[in-house]
Image 1 (cartoon, each protein chain N blue to C red):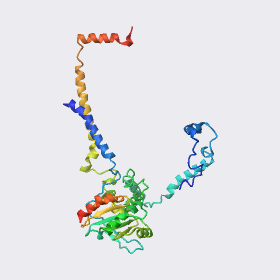
Image 2: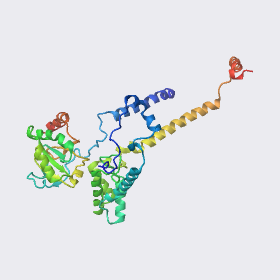
Image 3: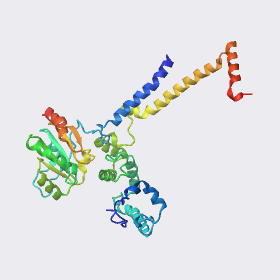
Image 4: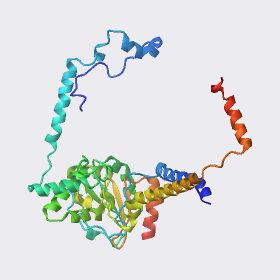
Amino acid sequence: MLKRLLFVLPLAVFAVGAAFLYWGLNPERNPAAIPSVLIDQPVPAFALPPIEGSSWPELSSADLGGEVTLVNVFASWCLPCRAEHPLLVDLAERRGVKVVGINYKDAPEDAIAWLQELGNPYAAIGADREGRAGIDWGISGVPETFVVDREGTIRYRHVGPIHAVELEELILPILERLR
Amino acid sequence: MITSLLPRKGPPHPVPLPPGERGRKLHRRHSIAPLPSWERGWGEGAARTLLLLVALLLAAPALAQEPRLEDPALEARARELQREIRCVVCQNESIDSSQAGIARDLRLLVRERLAAGDSDDEVRHFLVARYGDYVLFRPPLRPGTWLLWFGPGLVLLLGAGGLALALRRHRRRGAAGPAPLDPEEQRRLEALLRDEPGRKA
């Protein structure tokens, strides 16, 4: 019996190794993705001023909840933000999704020029010049996007720019479910 | 940016050799002089480069203008903490050694919390509440991390157990010794030894 077990052992070791490599080398896996602890937690308490010199309303945690909302952390110096921006404009204007923004470590005049050029999908924008609110949201970079439900609970976190496919297959279904 | 500081040397791209010479390029460069000026190696331009590089090395600390805590004991605690907090964008570095913007923000935050009178554990909790256990290089001991903490010991125990079992069995078999050869086997062994090529008389 024990002898037969000994023959199976290398096979078992191989199987475990192969499973680990399959997981580790899977191109779909993003090794930089950190599991968010904020999922299913209430939004962190924060209160941000508006972008200086703009007439767009400011953003604080009190503004979240009541309606399913997309919270997008962006900056004018962030190139991937530019890439995802048309999707946000489309979401806000054509699909009627409430999108709010956290303008992360940005110069006010740059942010205003950027939004004037690309369009402003945000119902409210908080200017996080020190990046402190970003830390409260647990972001590791920009852009990042969160889905907040009607109770003001974070239900989804997206690291990096949103691609059209991800919007259709991931984010819209979540928004649909929560509404 | 940096390249503009260094002395310009030669054309930006390797000069193509005539078709027949291409295969012998390496050979030529090492054996036949004279080399073109930009390939002559360490000359006076190189000394200037070296000087600039050394100056760059010294320039780095001059730029590190991060507010330190007044109290050296508190500052030491901050440094200690920062060494065990993982940078969330450059995941194999601590925030103490990382140049990333967010790492700098987290360093400032750690100092700020310590200055406000937080204990080390309170600072850790503050960060874990935002970034998860992931930010700690030393994960806490919880049922979810038992395998992580005790896994290596478990593997060691399993290996030691297996080895002990194998040794015991080996010893038991060794005590009995192999069965003696029967006359037929003995005859064959002698025949083999006689025919061995190395022992030809």
